[in-house]
Length: 381
Image (cartoon, rainbow, N blue to C red):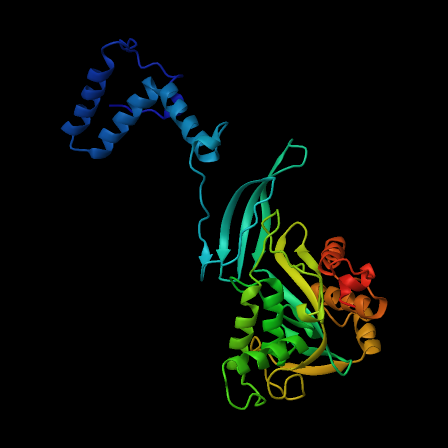
C-alpha cells in the first residue's frame, strides 16, 4: 500500500470513492490492518491505523487534544479539578506555630516546613475583590519574645554576637521562641533566666517562698538552673496564654502593674515582623531592676542555655544604649525596636502597652474607693 504524509491527506486524490461513514469505517480499518499483518510488518499495521484515524477522525482527535490541554492548564473551570501540589515539599518537622489565614486568604500551599518555620505560597484576593494573586510568598515563624534587661545597678545587659543572616557583629537583647502553653510574659521570664540567670525581685522572693513552703533546708542556698526553671514554671502556672479576637497571643498585662504583680516587667507591645510576608510576631518587654536567680547570674563569664552561637556579655549605661540604637548597632529591626521602646520607657516615661485605660479602671476598682493618680495606678506607683 502506498502511504502518504498526513499533511497531504486532504490534497491528494487516490482515485477511490469516499467511504460510507455509517458502516464502512470499521471494515476498512480492519482490512487495512489485515493488509499490514499479511506482510508481517507491525510498523505497517501502526501506520495503517494512524492513517485511518487521521483521515476519518481528525475532528475528534482535535477535540480530545483541546480537552487535555484545558485540563492541564486549568481551563475556564480549573476549580473543578484537584489543585496540583508542589513537585517537592521540604519537611524536617511539623511546624508548631499557628498558620496565618487572613480575611483575603483563598488558599495556602506549603513548600517547606520545619518545627520553627514554614514557607507557604498564598492565594490572596485583592482588597477591592477585582483580582487574585496566586504567588504570594509568606513565611511563618513561631512567635517570639525580645527583652531589654536593666540590672539593679542601672546598666543594660546585652549580647555582642554574630548571626547567620547578619554580616559582621551585632548587639542583641535576650530573645527566643514562645513555647506551647506559655504566655508571652512567662516566655520572657524563662528566656531571661536561661540566657542571663536573672529575673525580677518578685520572682526571687516567690522562689524563696516556695522553698520555705516545701520545708527545704538552707533556703538561702543558691539554686541551680534546673531547679530555678522548675520553680519558675510553678510560679507562672497561674498565667496561662490568652488570645485576642484575631486568635493571636495577647501579651498585655491581665492586671495593673503593682509590686505584687511584677511591676518591674514592662510590656512594650506586639509587632508583626514583616507586614506582607509574615515572619511571626515579636512580643517586646523591658525588665527593670533585674537580680540574680542563680549563681553568677548576669555577671561576666555566666554561661546560659542559648542557641549555641558564641556570645559576649556587654554592659551599657543609658547613654551608651541610646548611642548603640542611634548608630544602628542592633542590626535586626526587632532588636532595635525593643531597645528603642525600652529607652522611651526609661528615659521618657512612656507607659506600658497596651491597655492603659483598662489598667487605670482596674486599679481604681482595686483601690476600693481610695483616690489615686491614674498614671501612678497603671504603673504601680
